Image (tube, rainbow, N blue to C red; front, side, top):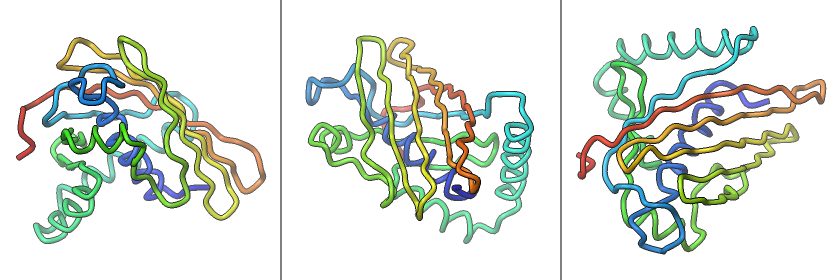
Length: 188
């Protein structure tokens, strides 16, 4: 089963892929989405014990990030920058930069994922897209499925589910909701 850090990195990687999964008709493959900086807020959905525990972990993480040294924050920012994501410690939102090069790479099938994950299968439609990605790290399987709905060219909402195989072989599922809005045409 993926630990919290691995799960966070998979989600961040997927957020970057999702935000990059469309563009201003560069490849004529994906629905229109503005290039530039997007702010993405991800929340755990569900009322079960695991969902509540994950929400508590998110709050702790936000508090930890607030108290980090500038050097540590910079190191995290550099690592996340390689995934085109930035972390905003004020409210736990991620800022994702969508660049033309990312869209072109995606159109050519060159999506970066974790080494033990498949490239996402993306199905587009006029108002968004759906996706599936599978991971297999040292035995346990994880499947991430989701749906993104555009709200014009300045916002989108998404819901996704992460199902992970436990040590007992049973699949456990966690649901997430996202809201995203376009912030600026440049990423700095």
